[in-house]
Image (cartoon, rainbow, N blue to C red; front, side, top):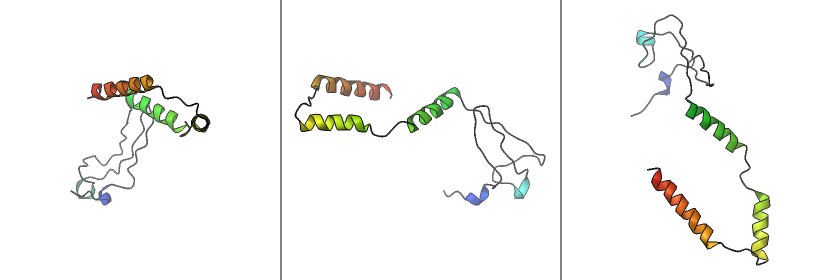
Length: 109
């Protein structure tokens, strides 16, 4: 199934904020209206509101976007420890983290 972008009116806009944002309508009906539209010719505005979960997700995304991708100081410290032979592997801690990840994955199903 192919969706034609020409059926979406250029004046229809959606931009959000937590309190809801007016959405422009073309006011077209009948043959001139986009697929599925059945608004009266009078101007109307709808409001869009985000749930608290969606708002929290937006906040988390913004927080993550502000974090550096790589902690260069930590990478250099590990590299130095490997190069001079002082880096130690804690097998018990690794096993605990793998088990924790496995529990999180199976619990999410």
